[in-house]
Length: 99
Image (cartoon, rainbow, N blue to C red; front, top):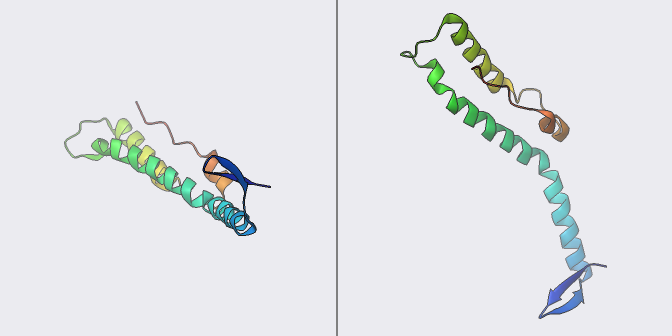
């Protein structure tokens, strides 16, 4: 049985407290996909922000460099498409930026 500490004394949890803990655990697990997607989107958005300079009109890039950066940004924007499970989210790695 689960316990808690009250005034320095180990006390057994009530049935209601055990039920509440189990419900919290289920709710936390149910939100795992949403948390993982939010983290992925945050990382993706940071990478897009860090590469914004590559699409400015006054940046001098060769056509090949420009295409590489455009492709990279497209890959980033599309990275969350067709992702529907936690395992899929966890298996995604962001593409490497062009050098």
